[in-house]
Image: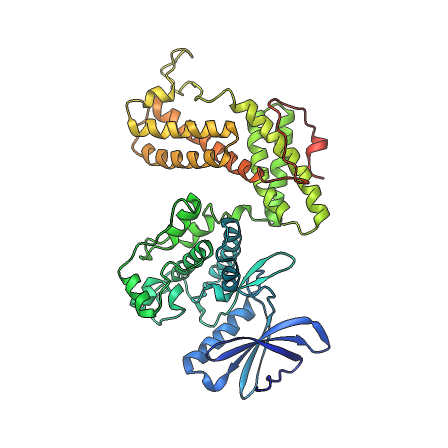
Length: 476
């Protein structure tokens, strides 16, 4: 067994990984045994000119950028034989091992990893950097204080703007975008295909084109074999994300902006200082509106606040603070449920509202409902009926079903409204779509809140109103 290389200032403990031109060791700072690091040792005599350039790029990228979801480079050293890159040690191993140990991951865990990966990519794209070798083996995990994903190994990274076209092949075939694998020509969207493969592997335990050889892999990609995503095994949001990322044609693949804003990723509601502040502001507004008896507006604000604050409570590392946080959130959840019951239980059908028409007026008993106005247009009638069923599910507390029904209806109505001529029906549809969009978000928020428990006791929700004061309900 050969001796470990000597790195000034560090004591190498063991080998933790090996590649074609480098070996990664676990080490600690001398005299500080608890200060663990990873040292990537690159053998200079094994490097081609292009490989040398890649190492220079890797060091340049990692030295320049610091981000909580990117493995931090602490230092780099070189001598005649080797280049030593000293990195923070990620004690949770890599995502590939994490998946294999569990066979596959839940959507909840997959979403957390996708959010963290999205934040890293958002940062890299803001600096025109493409990773070009995204795969589970290069996504490292930290165990504490919370399970955290960090992007590592920037050996193939490159500076690429949105318009840059590259021709040299890079990456690992199983995670490589079709345009790179087959045509050796690609742009920044190549990384998005890799993200799709990683997400697929998280959910199903294997890559979509898992093959015994590169030849078989290329054949599957070349034939554009359909990627199977069983609808009964994933949520519609997860399915939509996978289908959007795993488009063979990069021009049809979702953009970075679409990825960052996708509802499955939902970066806006990640547990951050900013989202906590947004949640608090919404709750303060809700309590104020509630005290002013503006119940519909208060209900929406409670739901908005909960969407921001529930992820923050789940992410709180301090057990005592977390329990206190959840107790306070349960008050808001309970009040939101009370308002929902009062606002919607007697409104299963759409309100008959007057159209905004300056030349014509209608008495309430003569004004036609949206349902009757749509009965001669089957597609519109179907979309409205689906939304009404969503409203029914919302009242019954079946929030997942409500959310899905609203989403289906709103997607249909968005397309149908493009062809709808101006008039009473158009005005009613626009008004109702706005209301249903709000209800859809409220259903999503209450679905999150449904899991909130304190001391394993579910929240008991009464049917009517109960008094709630700003003093007792606002987070201090």
